[in-house]
Image (cartoon, rainbow, N blue to C red):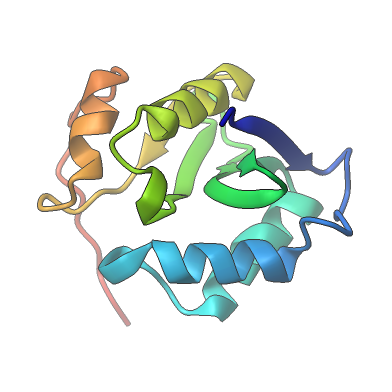
Length: 144
């Protein structure tokens, strides 16, 4: 089976076959313990449609097997121009290099630097390191 990439961005608009709801459901299911509520995932896709970025889907036999969502920050030169918000693979396709291929394609589509947040115990951390991401900063947040 060959994975086919499907790009959804501002220019392509919303897709009837690979609807936001289908993407949200896929991510909510396959992000496992690192996931967010469906409403938050939808807000991320709304940002893609309204402000910039893209969703890159891995498709096999018309089914989503992987998804990457990147939001453009609009803040070049002082923070990275892109934020990797979500990446997930269907469990049946993990460990086969498809996630790396999907992420490599996403990196090629980005203009400028890319930031991401990953928990230290997330196995995807090793994929990011293989792709050239490094841990330059310690992130700190003030929650209100």
